[in-house]
Image (tube, rainbow, N blue to C red; front, side):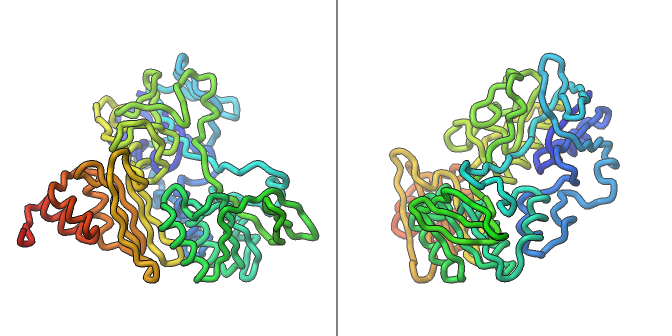
Length: 417
């Protein structure tokens, strides 16, 4: 069997390793579109913060790791996939044939349109090369605008702040982390960042950028603006699927896959950030561009490619974030389920917040800020869809009793009840 994996992120690397170990008689070719060793994008902020060297971003560190497993690591950009000819085309004109192929081509940075977005000094923070440019352009006291206060933006925020820059965060939505936090949580994180010396402008949109005397003049919609040295764009990502146009592979927001990570074309699978697959709680096909989902996708897709029928139960939206020392997390349907209920416990001055969302007597979503002790328990209750019975009513009175609820409903403890 000729196995081909197109993409060297966590999904691709784990898939290639799984294929090599599951079918030692087959050949495995792992194709990466960047001239780098396979690395984790989530490690880039640690590189920017000078906490690790570039080697610390690499997904595997053993000498000749891929070669030792019989994996042929190829650097090249895949430009198209032909299901009919069972081949992928490369940007150097070459072609690679496959029996099955996996497409875990990760996401690409999505920069907003507008005048000046292509100027020197306006950088993404998504690749190792991006990180090199930002590191070279920033030092203590550099004036920096960070566009975007979503999950990626807040990770980059932490790294930039650690470099001692004068940092202004600009977010067009009305709160920080709008896809991970409700207003109570987003506003709390904003106050926390401001208390740490970061300027945060929500409900603010960059309308244009101009170069002037070695600096960048950034204009905001509404007339205001400021002069900075560097603009870092963290305004979102999109699945890297443009090269699939004309292939006949069904795509919507990403590549549509079933419970075996298979596409509509025989022998073609997708995983990770590009895979729009079943969600755990609703069964709807969604994209969850997070490393735990990518890793599990890669493993299960590889098993199916090798003929070991393995069902994927569905992904769960989950994010855990450290923003200048404030830990926040969100899981599942944190914004509520149709016909469901929710409960909140808020300590505004203490920067602590817990929110549980229910569907019937099952927790289907949660938010937590400044609280880490029960995060794993909450995630477990959501993932296992554990019925809480009368403990649902107790949690509606005091959501902090979630550990007790977990022990009673899963371990048989009684706590006197």
